Structure formats: C-alpha cells, structure tokens
Length: 512
Image: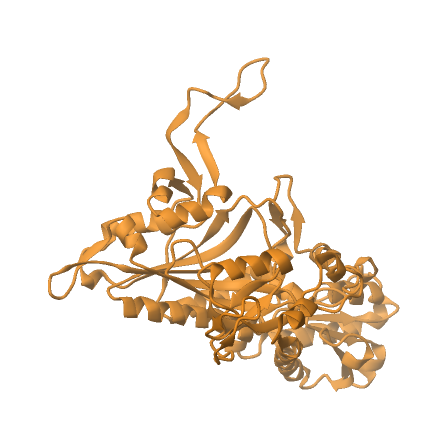
C-alpha cells in the first residue's frame, strides 16, 4: 500500500489525503463537506477522548450534554457571537416532510417552525440560557462543565479532519464568582491542552494569547496552542477563552455574593476537536504511512509469526501468543492511561511482506517478528515504526524479558517522536528584522506550492498592534499572527510594516 502514498516532497496536500485513506482513518461522505470516521480513526479519537477526559476530571470538571438545536434568538443575544458565526450556521426551518403519491418527497410548507433553529456551531448561548436556572448564589459557583458532542459549521472548503462541515469535539463552559477565578481557569485549560499535545500527542506547541483580530467572537481574550506541521504551516490545535461577563449579561445569569449583592457571573469556554487527528498525522507521519505516538495508538504492538509451512509456523505462533499474553499482563500505569498494552498476533496466511507494509502504513508503533530461526535462539526481531528500515530493527531480542523490552521501547518511541518534532519546529522558528527579510520568508503562494519546496517557517517579527496592519499582512503575504507566545521575546521595537512602535515580537505563519 505504501507505493500509492504520494511523497511529501512531491505534493504535501495529496500525501496527507493518501495517509488518511491508506491508514483507514476516514472517508468523504455523500453529504457535502462531511466525513465518515472509520473504525481505526474513531479508535484514535476515543484514545484522545479518554486522555483528555481524565485531565478534565483531574482538574475538577464534570460532563453534561446540551441540545443540538439552538433557537436563533439565543444566538442573536450576543452581538459578537452572532456576527462571528452567522455565515457558518445551518438552519432548521421546518419539522416535517410530506410524502404524496406520484410526487417526490418534499418539505411540508404547513410545518414551518415558529422560530428557526440553529444546529449548534458552539454551545455558549444555550448553555448560558440554562445556567440562568442553575445559578442563584455564590454557593452555586463555580460551574465546571464539559460536553463531548458534534457541531456544524458550514465550511466552503473542507479537508478530512482539518476542516469539515460537521466535526466532533469537546467544549468546556464554566461560570465563576470572580474575574480572577475565570481567568485562572482560562489559563489552566490552555495548559491542560498543552500537556495533552506534548505528553500524549508528542506534538510541541507554542502557547499564548491571540490578537484581538483573531480571538473568539464574544471573548475578552483567547489563549491558544499552535503547532508546526511538517510543511512549516501552523495548526491551531486548541483554544481557551475568557468571556468576561458578556454571556452572563446577555442571558441574565446573576448570583448573590457573600455580601448579598447581585453580580453577573464570569465565564470561560474552551475546546479541541477531531482536528487533532489531522495535527497528529502531519506532525509525525512519513512517506511510508501513518506514525502514531504510542500513548494514543489504538494498536501498540503487532506480532507476526513466520514460517513457510503450518508445521514451521506452529512454534512461532505459540511463542507469539505467549509474548502477547505477557504484554497484556504487564502492570497498568499512567503512560497507557491505565489500560493494557494493545497487542495483535497476525497469524493469517498473507505474505510477511504484505503484513509488514500494512502495519507500517497504519502506524503501529512496534512490530515483532518470530520465525523458526528465532525460535532456535529463543529470540525475536523487534522493529520500531518511527525509524523505518533496518535502522529501526533490533535482532536477537531474547523472548525472555521481551515484554518488558517492548514496553520500554514504546516509551522511548514516544519521547523520540516529541524530540524529533520539537527539533524540527525549533530549527524553523526564525526572526525577521526588516520587511525584505519577512517577504523572503513568505514567498508567493504558487511558488511555495512547487514540488520539493522548502518547508515554511514560523517568523518572529515586530508588529504595531493594529488590526489594520494585521489584515494587510494577511492579504499581501497570506500570513497571520498565530499568537503572542508567553515564552517569546518580549523586547520593544519598531513594526517592520509601518515603522510605528511595537510592544513585542509576535509569531507570523501560514496556517491551516
């Protein structure tokens, strides 16, 4: 299967789509802009869900569920929200179809809703309308609620996982008695996303606020995590928003404080989506197929018994099953989410080469081969997916102790993937001190698409802080300010675009 994957150097966009298809992650659906997530892709999302859900609950959050449909009047109550999402909303106007003999199925014109319903693009409005019933006193706060669900945003240009009309996500919505509490929550949750991205996805991220021009509609400010893909483009991988009292005022969510004074609640919201799967693919995968960090791999280890005949294979199969049982029986710990190591013994009659290629394309972190010659030596061959070819193979690994050896190797692969991705990203973060330097780093779009083109970069540059300059840079160079990194350079200077004073450097990049 690997020979049908376009190389990254030849066509990065097609390479990505080939990986999604050949690794069995998703298909385009017959509904425009939507996708079918296949079992392997959904198993990956389930792993992400379980890891994130535990991090949410460790920080005091609980799960709930709110309606898919939102009355249009709710969206209109928050002006910035209405303006920000108006062009992306799917609207339900009728509640019944009509089937008449000899006529095609059609909408019953007499079944028009009194008020149109929006299929949720995000749930702030309906949740805050609900919180109005739940919050009466400071004793009712904080409300720390998350929901796992789907949302719809009517995208015109879609790409599997990265941007689809319907996608899966989680959205946290919290209410607090003070601004300080809400701001602490906003920071805490972006750090939770950073922890998950770096420790589970092995994907290094920059963390910091968005500009006012890039923040979430209705937010006072937005914090984000930004990752670099192998083509040098940025991927916004998670956001956390301090909403101030905007939604509490729009939906009249008030409470009596300790002095019996009536106050509006303070709000946050935060979310990540199945876009993370796209980020994982583009951070780690290679021209041979998918590469999955072990902490998120649906299948950790495949064991392939070898032998030309059934009689030759029988001892290999027995040794493979024994090793598989030993791997599954290892003590469960935090690294694997307190779940057993997932192992498959492939004793099918397919050729060894086809099996090796299949599991390579699907990104299984470790492959173990056991053949007649290995049995004679009470040993096996262990291959790591992150290092293709002979360099990634370990020969003569004793079967006694092989389970512990493989478990350690899975941890080593996790660390190696993070270190490799971080080294790549860090090598491509540069500084532009003049407009000419900036122009050279953001070539014309068609030039940047040429086969074999050098990956793009993240560029630190001074900016005068105005939306006008930000919009101009996006229009002229197709580059956006990704964030103002917390750990980035803080020195003041001069904007390279206007010559006006600049408070600090920000990160520019092209993005998905």
